[in-house]
Amino acid sequence: MVRGDGFLTFAGQQYRVALGERGIVACKGEGDCGTPSGVLPLRRVLYRADRQAPPASAVPIEPIAPDDGWCDDPGHADYNRMIRLPHAAHHEKLWHPDQVYDVIGVLGWNDAPVKRGQGSAIFLHVARDDFQPTAGCLALSRTDLIAVLAHGLTAIEVRND
Image 1 (tube, one colour):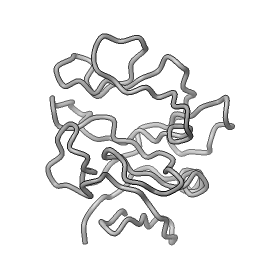
Image 2 (tube, one colour):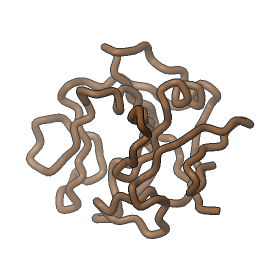
Image 3 (cartoon, helix red, strand yellow):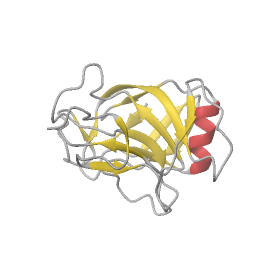
Image 4 (cartoon, one colour):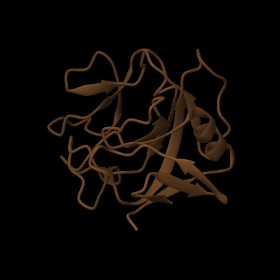
């Protein structure tokens, strides 16, 4: 469970989490910098095999490559889907020079079905050292992220209390 105070409670432990700049939002829109509220299933885990071994996880795991991206263009048919680069539509590169996407938990937000403009690329990923806000994702320290994945995380409940 994630609350607006920036903590994830899982398996009897509490972990610091960075949220979107606007905090937790009930009505998510593309580019609004809010973290969506609700139960977000963990669909799969992506990781950089050049930087670490595959993390233990209860969901499917796959390595990413330099040409992997995520479409965040609401006007494109690939909206809120993993893509290969180069890509004509606006997108996010998954192969980052920093550590934030070394491990990516793909969260089930606006994906069943995808609705244009209701938010894309909502991930559970590695936080920056200063836990600065995300663009709408949830971010944990690398150690904590690896720990919650290894403990069998399959969904996150995001809410304000």
